[in-house]
Image (cartoon, rainbow, N blue to C red):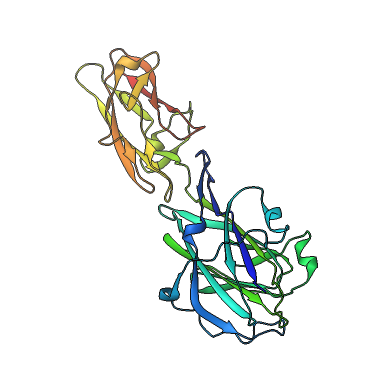
Length: 342
């Protein structure tokens, strides 16, 4: 009797999430019928409900040359239950009993700080399936009983650290961290242990992979005289160079340097003001700014600017330094400067 295997591949849903202020972006990578190939290698026998007679290694990639045979009504009704939509791959497993191997590939974008934070693998199986990703075994589901067709479906979750959790009806699972940037390989071993030659039923398969960005939002720090200045500070001090002290009204001036730093490991801090640093307040005419040399500060980087106090009248003179940037909610960064005209 012709014996069919039905593999239901919903594909891989990659959710690009951010732990900072970046918006979520979802990309769907799918595998369709033409992406799956059947190996010319078959493991014969093995009708005792275990995987112990499988070879130590997978069939060579070059053996996956056959196009799986499409079946029609021979596929059990439970197969579509895993998902209402998706791509379906049907292949035949004939007698004698044994194992056939199916292979496909999918792409992951793991550039620029992206990592796989989780992958949920779900199957529906009549007679057992074994799963490999990038040549590394992930799980064995070997129980061939009708109960496997009912919820909860055979499921496991590959966590970001490679550990396996949320295990349902998988007889064996193995830690996995071998995700690759670019092309990844998925191999399923489907088994028919029915030595009487009856149909092995079918397999449904789905894997949802979540890829998360681990970027850190930019964080501004401003220092004067190597001391940190608090944002929105109205207190001046010679310690952080915000107090310029006494300066003669005619013919004298004082210049202090300030440094803008961005937290190491973070996204670029963008100084987006025009100009990048401005002066405001009652006595703004008494203070001028020499602009930073760059408006983009990478994580761990810094840039500097100078403030010059040139009093136009005697007495206390003060102003506010304003730095606009992309570090929310600390935008803008403002602090007070003061000097004494003499």
